[in-house]
Image (cartoon, rainbow, N blue to C red; front, top):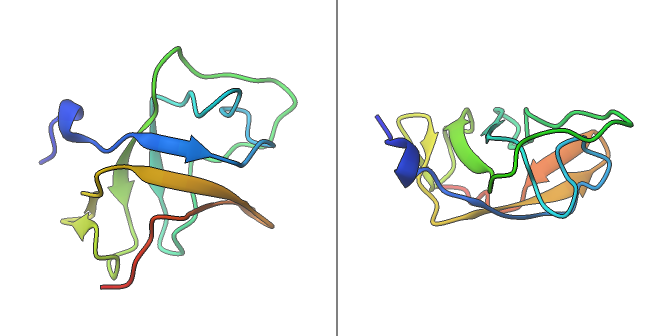
Amino acid sequence: MTDLLEMPPVHDCSATSCAYNHDGCHAFAISMNADAECATFLSLNDKGGLDVVAQVGACQRADCVNNEALECRAPFVSVGSAASGADCLSYAAA
């Protein structure tokens, strides 16, 4: 199990339509789904989150080189805007 302090930070996120993104991602933690999309993406007019640097916990993209036991082990993650929300730009096929 990954300790909270070992979770990789969200280095940057260009998904500006996400309610958690205002001058960076302010979700406490994000998850990536099996399509390497940010499952935490939330499209609302309101902005939310905490005064933290978001971290990546769960990752369902089992074929990613950074995935270990369904948790992200990348040094950091970049998230980018996508048609359906936001994608993990740090995904790399194993």
